[in-house]
Image 1: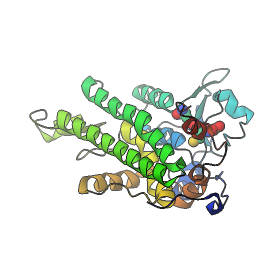
Image 2 (image 1 turned 90 degrees about the vertical axis):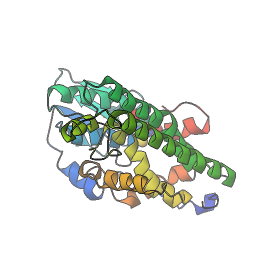
Image 3 (image 1 turned 180 degrees about the horizontal axis):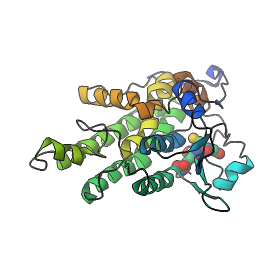
Length: 297
Ligand SMILES: N[C@@H](CCC(=O)N[C@@H](CS)C(=O)NCC(=O)O)C(=O)O
């Protein structure tokens, strides 16, 4: 773990306004008008989880990616009352309607896909217990992993950084324990007979399980795990946990074509997270909530 940064180490890097790399190509492919417009910012992990869902579920969208949520432009406030990205504008209504909150948007996209593209990031509705296990994973991501990420990145003293590193590491291990539980309880033992049935049961359990595809919890957690591999690594010397299965999971997640399609190059995240790493004043609503011990917005 690196020593605490002092303000003189702060190069003053500003957050970016435009995607780079593969994410930029994906943005360019989604500029035609569609029933849904996604309002986003290139660095935002809450946006990325929604973007991954659009891509995986095959729901047509237009992306408006240069939104600056710190400047609160009028068209963002129209779709997201607190001026936070992501926001959706739904043009099938007249006048258009809107949705905000990444977790709510994810559920909306799942419901929409159920009757349109017939794709899903969750286990089948015929397996309510498996769906509940995935929701437990997501609950953990939102209540433990995400706040731990920001607490760690914003920690300024050496002690607080050591504590933050432990907390974030424990949150990752907690997620792994929940992945293992789902694998054991849904796919282990006498549960599944043939290969076909196993594949059907694995659906929605995510990339952790053998033969699994991207799942709901991967979309929920992936953006922070990715930023741990670049921003946390750069500013805090953080290394993702070792171990064959965890490393294989990371490899599958970061190289999944849908996840990759929403990733910019690492420098974008490193620059965009400097303001968190040096805990600059009024960095964001999330940063303020962490500094004042409040729940995240
Ligand atoms: N709870 C929201 C959080 C979204 C959020 O905090 N987005 C950040 C960008 S990563 C934002 O818009 N910040 C603007 C601000 O802090 O004013 C969600 O899940 O959608």
